[in-house]
Length: 79
Image 1 (cartoon, rainbow, N blue to C red):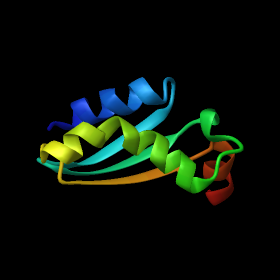
Image 2 (image 1 turned 90 degrees about the vertical axis):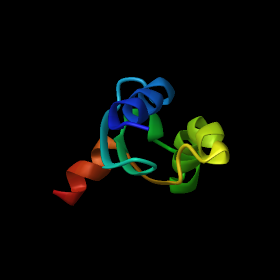
Image 3 (image 1 turned 180 degrees about the vertical axis):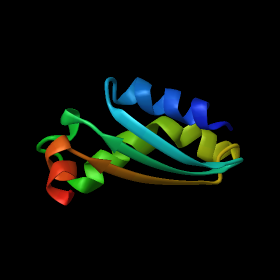
Image 4 (image 1 turned 90 degrees about the horizontal axis):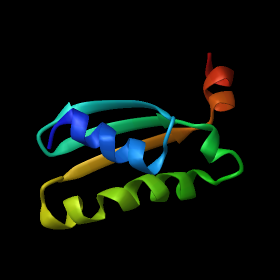
């Protein structure tokens, strides 16, 4: 799988999000920043993104995926 493929999949689940993907081959780290995450627990945010990769993970096309999901306010508070 390629970085742009991972980014497209995340974008389909969280439209308009700021998405950063790092990694290669079958192991990626994804950071997603979206207002869509307002009011959601960290676990629910990660689950919503991970659900889009269920088939890729089950087939072995994707071996490892780390997801960090934030709201814009959370990112601003970290700066």
